[in-house]
Amino acid sequence: MTEKTHSSDDWLSRSDNAESKKNYRRISKKEYAREGILKSWYGLDLAHGEIEHHQSRVQSIETLLPEVIEEIEWSDVNLYNSILKNWGKIVGDALKNRILPVAIHGFWLYVEYSDASTSFYLREYQHILEKKIEDLTDGVIRKIKFIPAGTVR
Image 1 (cartoon, helix red, strand yellow):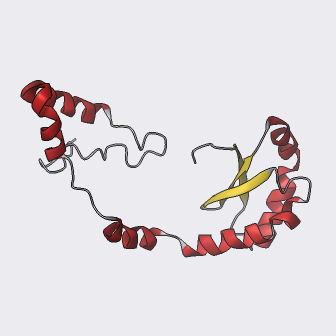
Image 2 (cartoon, helix red, strand yellow; image 1 turned 180 degrees about the vertical axis):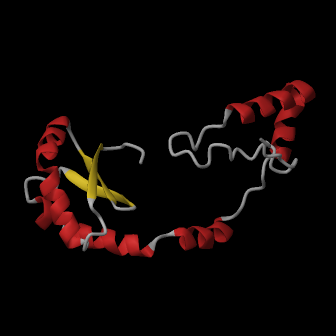
Image 3 (spheres, helix red, strand yellow; image 1 turned 45 degrees about the vertical axis):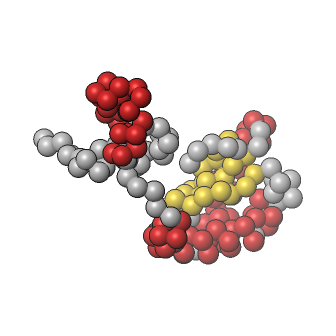
C-alpha cells in the first residue's frame, strides 16, 4: 500500500478532511502533526511564516465561482424548486411552516423539522409524504429523511 506523497506546496493544504462532511473544517491529525514539526523546527517566532509559506495560495472568488457552478446539478435545482412551489399541497397547512425541504441527494429528500413533537408526528405519515413526493417528481425522489433543524447534511 502506497501513501499519497505531498509536494512542499500542498504539504499543509488542509485537504485531508475535504471529503468528510462532518470534519471538513478541521485539520486532520496528520496535518496538525506537520504544523507541529514546523513549529519545533523553526521555533514559535518563525513558524507562522513558514506554515503560511507551505499552505496553498488564496484563490479569488472570480476563479473559484465557475468551478463551483459547473458542479451544480441543475436538474436537482429544478426539482427542488418544484417541490418548494408545491410544498403546502404536499404536507398540508398544519406542517408547511414546521418542516422544510433542505436538500436532495440521489433519490433522497432531506427535510428539516423544528421540534420533537413534529418528529413524532412525521414518523406516522412518512410513507404518505413519500408517496406524494414520488408522484410529484415522477419517481426521481423515493425516500424522505427527516433531520433536526440545523443538522449538517
